[in-house]
Length: 154
Image 1 (tube, rainbow, N blue to C red):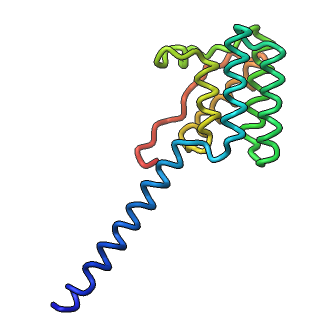
Image 2 (cartoon, rainbow, N blue to C red; image 1 turned 90 degrees about the vertical axis):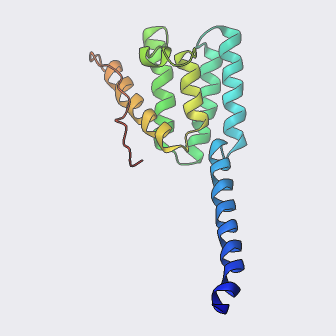
C-alpha cells in the first residue's frame, strides 16, 4: 500500500503533464503553425473585399500563398489555389452552392478559412474534394461538389 501512495503523486503529475500537452496541442491546432500563411490569407481577404471579387490583385496574392505552399511542400494546397483562380477566371466567379449555405460566409471566404486551417484533417479532406470538383468542371464535366463522407472514427 505504501508503494501505491508513493506512486500516486507521480502518476497525478504525469497525468497532469500529459493532459497539459494534449490541451496545448489542441490549442495549437486551432491556429495555423505558420504566421506567413495567416498573413497572406488576411491580405487576400482584404483585396477580395476591396475589389469585390477575384481580381488580378487577388490572384497575385493567391499566387504568393501558392508559392509559400510550394516551399512547404504542400502539393494539395498548391494545386487547390491554382484550380480556384483558374475556375474563377473560367466561370467569372467562385461559388460552391453547398458552401454558400454555410453560416453566411461566401464560398471564397469559406475556402480561405480551409486554407488558413489546412493542417486540420477535415479541412484537408474537404480541399481534396474541392480539387476533384474543380478539375472536373474545368475539364467541361457536369460535376457536383460533394463533401467527404463523415467518418465517425476520424
